[in-house]
Length: 605
Image 1 (cartoon, rainbow, N blue to C red):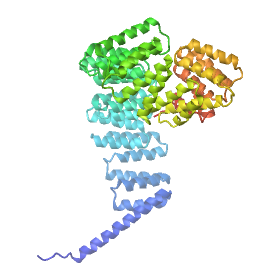
Image 2 (cartoon, one colour; image 1 turned 180 degrees about the vertical axis):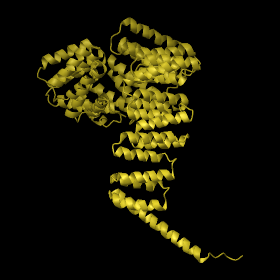
Image 3 (cartoon, rainbow, N blue to C red; image 1 turned 180 degrees about the horizontal axis):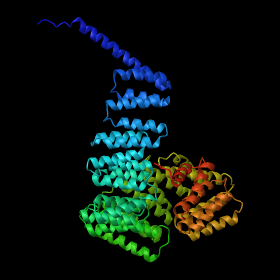
């Protein structure tokens, strides 16, 4: 087969075509460079030449127009736009360009007419609507973008086709009511958007806007009990920490959809974490009563309900003996039904805590955990936790050797793990309580590097305390009195602790422990829920002893009281700021800055 040879004229045509394309590319690069440098006259000349070769190029035309506008050659610019409109009368972006020209000349009415003409001539399809709306959005003309989407919805005969886009626009415009309305419209059209909508609402709604959200949701639910709307309503209550109202909505959903109670279980957990124990108990009890023993959440719900009842009664020490006996009977009934062993180990631990700390029946607490320790099948973590708690109770009972033996067993078994570090810390604290300060300090110095921030901070605190108060004395009498008082507080023997501290204050009036005495007394009053008294004493520590080691502790504790108990976030914010400004080396500085930012309204991860 003979090979085909191109005629000479074809070679010539190809050559000139390549030359033209190369020249065009060079002109474009040069034009762009001039444009970037602000040399608009030179750039306009080159873009004009490029347009003559390709008058359909939006890139060449738009850059040419921008150059003329920047040069304030408005008449030439208008002629160019009109010429382009004759070539492409259906290109609605040209009307936007025309409007931009009038805007630049502050001819508002003329600009508006061009923008509205663009919207009027827009093609009735998704791509065309989005393209035109994007032109308006990119130039900050949100009202015309809104009109574009609204007309697009009518043209496509789908009122919610652009609901999400409209919600985004109203968000940018700072109109939360309309933003909520269109996000809800988008959710009605596409239930899959519920988590996206939740994320956006959580991010952009101010706390006061949630009332508006709930009002709109109630109105819609009355017309249509859409489960997604009910879920969003419940979610909105959770955002406001109104767990009781959220529970009411989740119960309705659970019954309507015949669910297994998982939503309610999760909500009860959230309420418990927020210390709304009443709502948590209602949620857990609902699962126990309505779902039956075969439900996967039944056992956990039963157990967590009792834990919440225990915390509700015991946290704050404002309970009666009858309250404690009622709770004790509930625990014992549960264990009589389900037995004592691996599956119920956490319940046994809770009952032992109740007996030891609140009912003051240490022998029963010890007996419960001694039996649990012998139960077959306990995993190593369960056994370790049992031993640590049992050691605490032996220490409270005065059986120091039994206590240190158990702590040491866990320390040896777990070494560098957190349970081992906790046991090592408590063993060192036992020595501190018992007056063996130098050995205790050596252990605390090691534990300052603990992987647990809480253990590390407590170890550092006690190490510095011993160093400050032992090395200054020729005798350890004063610090021994103080550590004995701490032991009594540990045992919840508050009256005896106060007597011990009074003796210390009377016999050593000039001792450096004065701030520590006040601080420990404040902690006791806080445990007893006498928050005003506790706050006054924390303040006294910070005011009278600003250079001593308890000053930052007292400020942080006071900030926590004002934030969470005394309902004065402004005072809390001032205190947190003082900590990270005046006590930047404090172990509380990082957390204080975080709490300060939260109270200021910052988004904190």
